[in-house]
Length: 396
Image 1 (cartoon, helix red, strand yellow):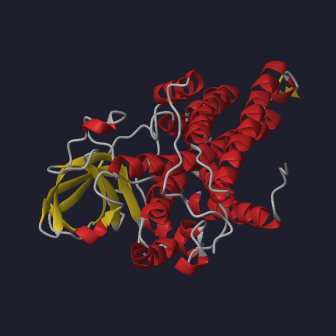
Image 2 (tube, helix red, strand yellow):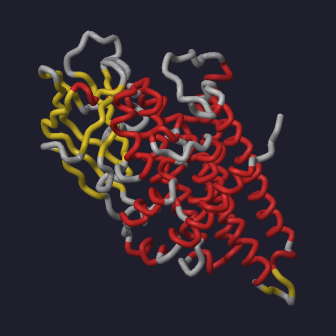
Image 3 (cartoon, helix red, strand yellow):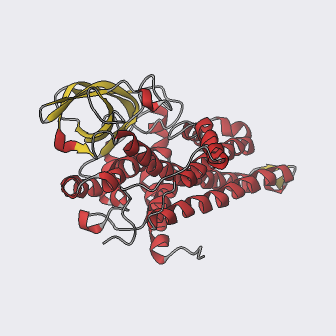
């Protein structure tokens, strides 16, 4: 078993770290204070190749492996969660779902522009009254000739005002399919589609989040991904991809907490010596190191499983659950190390605390992942090999 990263991995880490520090952090405190997102950064992420990092070269992507995707997410979230959220939604939930479930015609149609950032992808699953309980979604799709008519709304949608198209899961109004759900690619330009931003968030203030609405939105049948009845399977496989990006990004928050805390602990003097000499401060630093190293191993393993085409729902759930909890704990400790200064935005650790709290909720709550892990171990849950698998790496 080889744990060494390749030269390409190291180059991607360096490039994404530099982008995060030079581009994402530029003016971030002001944007975070104002709760303002900036569409320009998404264009620049596309120009840098990050929005197509693990898309095959034949679709204009970088063609790097899935571990590379995790590394980019880690380094971008080391700068700010808003950048990683864009990766999660565009790359993980939208593009990778299209790679896994789309026909070749659909891939040729949409992936090249997604990979270069000329087209931004979103994801619509959560609703105002439906989070973890997705089987009770209210958004419907009614077949009408060669098209489907969508009605309903989705909530807490990242890139709601920016994405050009959304992978939307809806309940089929009339169908003979055993599972009455389907997934569609819905362009925001379609008549009856609208979006509205959500303001006043605790964290990820520099990212765009909102609601999307469907008022008799007519979607042609060639925009259905998979078949009637595949909607939930597509949604859950999309969540596997999204959870991978969240798990890897959480390691970036831990590293950011270490960056800030080590610097502060070596500079802040108490009693004639840096507070880093205090054992209780060292204990908190050591705990962050522990979380970072465990977190990397967990997401590297999932990346390897993706590379080799293995089902990984159990493993990615564990990585997401463990890493997000560790990131929140690291951020809480970083605020503690900074004392009163950690309670204001003169230092970045209060932002890490706010941002890390959200990841414990989205892409499966702490409680949901607790149940998932217990059910696997008890034998109440198992994974069956699927007919649709993510393209293995190296890509053809």
